[in-house]
Image (cartoon, rainbow, N blue to C red; front, side, top):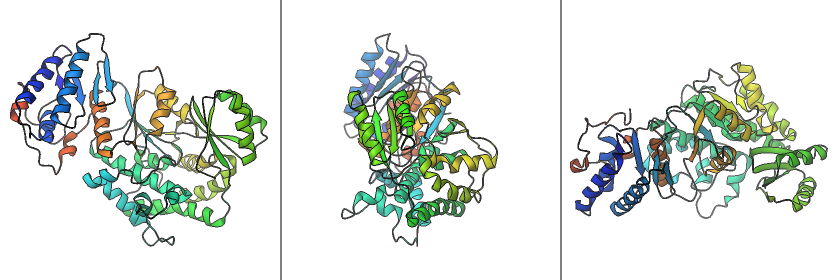
Length: 458
């Protein structure tokens, strides 16, 4: 719902509530939503609601009206789907897409989005085509969308896990692009960097065949290391609620047997080390207010021990097309923007597995450069929590595009609702494609312009 001012917004709520009170009980909600969202221009003051029925919509509008009656209400961000911001972050604040890495995968992720959006399904199909005829004898979709009899363990293997997250990241990015949500910056966490490189245009693939060659090229490095039995093994330990200074001291004191692998946010760091070093670390932290959890990986990710992976990856990137980034891209190795020099790009990309993921510092750098809206573009939503912890108390918003505890469709609506409330341009016509929506003329605002059918929000 939109209005020219905060003062006028309650009248718009009352108008729509009055219409719903008289509307037929079987009025399709999609028709009412399409009429509100796509058949007139949007005013500056915005209230967005995610509703599952007319009754749900009416109850949420009543709730919003009551809260807006208090002049001190500057924002509403209700978990059930009511969003209002008196001081929207866009267009002054930049929008950043944040791509998760291995560890974000889960079975059947984005499955319902595949059914409703061909753009999403096409990406999973493309990744399957990349592995058609592969010697291992199965496709990524066999692991991501497995039959009940298949063990989930394969989803966490070194190659399958990275491929699964890559496929989900690219699928979600395709959907976000179709909604005409345009980022001002991108970043990838760990293996998520491969998605960020493509989204930025820094790694160029001119067509599907080139993209498939790129996917197989990166996979080939994984496969060669996996088959060589030279994967460095170690234990990864997530630690919450411990000071960074203490963990840095423990790593320095370990004489190379313990490393900070991922610096995710002020209250979570992942340490990597031998079984003995990790056990000693846990004992050391026993007297602290720290929560420790071993992760389901046995690989020495993001430590100097993984330099064995950097060399062949660098050789592969010698063959990749490195162009000019169309969207600024940040590196979690350097915690700053990627360099422009192609060889420097290849160097930085290839050493990521052997360096600490400096996600906390990178988010802080992006914030200093003007990023205020962070959209996690991929599965699960872990990075959103890291951003919330890092930017706590500042003016920003972090929104996951997908979470495991909600359907993909529902979370997509929560995403676009919050973006629209923050004045981010979004083309909502995609949500109604192939659904034959019909205009509900009586639901239109009294003053309206011609229907906006081609580009959604200007």
